Length: 377
Image (cartoon, rainbow, N blue to C red; front, side, top):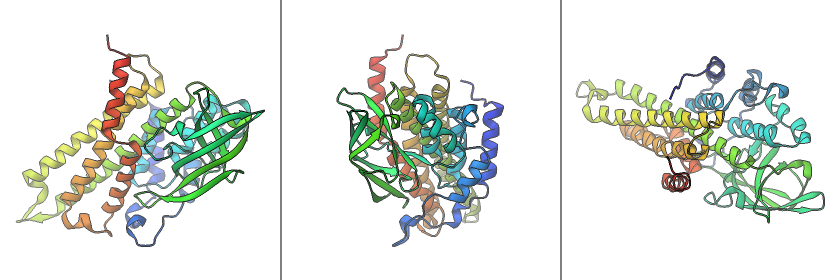
């Protein structure tokens, strides 16, 4: 595989580095570890800078004012955002806007993507289901009632639910189809309840009680949810990679400065071997991420659909980010247990990403089912 990025993709990554260079997560205590504290919502100043840098419309075509780039470019930017724990709905809003542009009706296309690309509108996706473990598309029902759709159900752990102007909600019909409902904030029949992630960030439990939506606000297109779901998962893998890279760098810097018996502990074989193992994890996370992103970007034919590559990326990302932060905590010694030290904040975010990706065993089972259904020649 050729992992050489195009000039346009590299330009997006460089622009992201410039924007995120002004973010200082090390100075922000983890709200999850501060009694009684709750994280603020979206970093609106950072969101505005991302809009000014044209980084909110990477996946949108030029007709929507976007850059016309692909999943690889988005993942490059997400990777940089995770290094500074950027509190912005970059993944969710970008993916949702792209899904509307690709699969939505003309009214939805004219109303949402361009405004989202300019940062005027924030979108998010309810992708965790009722419990966080069951398929998201089964948590909400959608039925036709004349010219309208009626939605009932519960979606849990919706990211940026209180910041988003529109939440994209997958729902299943009696015919077994999955539709995407574009639910405006404050819509009649829609209730939000506070939830908090392991990192202390504010999430929302979304309850739909006979919520009526016009036909223009429901996307009923084959493959729309599957494409959006795979893009969200791949983007989450990119976040895990960026965070893990930053944590391993922090660990390298610390072990190079910390001395025992007159020598930096980085020179000790036990420390070097653990760090080397985690470096291998990073390279595996990176290789599987770009394979999945390339599959999504190119739609290239093969024995397995994109879902197979996404499953492999999720396995490595969920396991890899956990091992990296655990090793970092161990090698930092007492500093790893200090809530005032920035490593704790990265550890909390890593756990949130790991839980969002789901257990590796479940992805391995899904991959096995795909291999059985699509045997290699």
